[in-house]
Image (cartoon, rainbow, N blue to C red; front, side, top):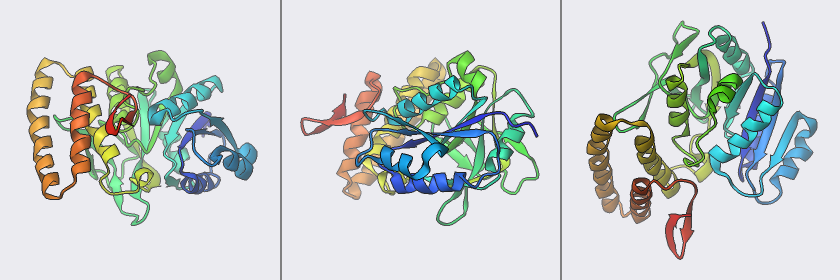
Length: 306
C-alpha cells in the first residue's frame, strides 16, 4: 500500500481530557506516514503547555491567542498542513477515539478514485457503541439527516451528500486548487454542509469508507443536551447557507418550510419554559437575515453578534 502523508488536525478548546483520550487512541494506529497538529484555540489553564509536556514530539502544537471558532481554528491547522506538504488533511474532533486501522481504510479508499475530494468514517456513539452515521442527506430546510443505510454493507465505500464533521479527510490539492478552507463566517456548526457542497460543485465526490470506524462523544463541547449555543449557530448558519448557496426557487422552498418549523419549535420551548433557547432562536433569525456571521457573543446583558 502507498502511504501518502496525512496531517491530522485536532482542535482543542478547554477540552484537555477529551484531547488526551483522542491522542492516546491515535498513537495506536497502524498507518505509517502521518503527523498530528493540535490547534489550541486559546484554552484556559495553559492546556497547550500540558499537551506539549505529555506528548512531546508526537504532536505539533499551534497556540492561538483567541478563540477563532471551529472553522477559523481548523483553517490555521489546514494551512500548516499544506505548508508541511501533506497529501491529505484530516479534521478530527477532539471528542473522538479511533480504531487502529481507521486511517489505513480512509487512505485506501481515497487512493482508489482521485475524484473523491472529501472522505469520512462510519461514526459510532462513544458511550453506547451504537452506529449513528453511515451517510447523510440534506432536506429542503438544509437540515442534515443522518442515515444508517449502509450499516454492515459489503461495499468498501459509498458516496454521500454530506460527511460527518467529526472526521473529514480532504485532498490537499482540492484545498489549494479550489480554496477549500472552512468558511469562517460560519464559526462552528454546519461547516461540513458548506464544504461538502462546495467540493461537489467543484466536481468532487463525497465518500464514506465503510471499514473506517471512529467513536464520537457527541455534544460534549457544550455539556450535552439542548443548549443555546448549538441552537443559535445551527439556525443562523442554515439561513446563511441558504443565502449563499440556494437559487431563487430553492430559497422560496427553504423559507416557506424553515420558518414555520422553527416557530413550531418555539411553541414547544414556551411550554417547556426554555426561554434561553427561544432567545437564541430569535437572535439567530436576526443575525441570519442580516447576513451577520462570525462569533456569537453576549453584549450589554443581551446576546448579540460581534
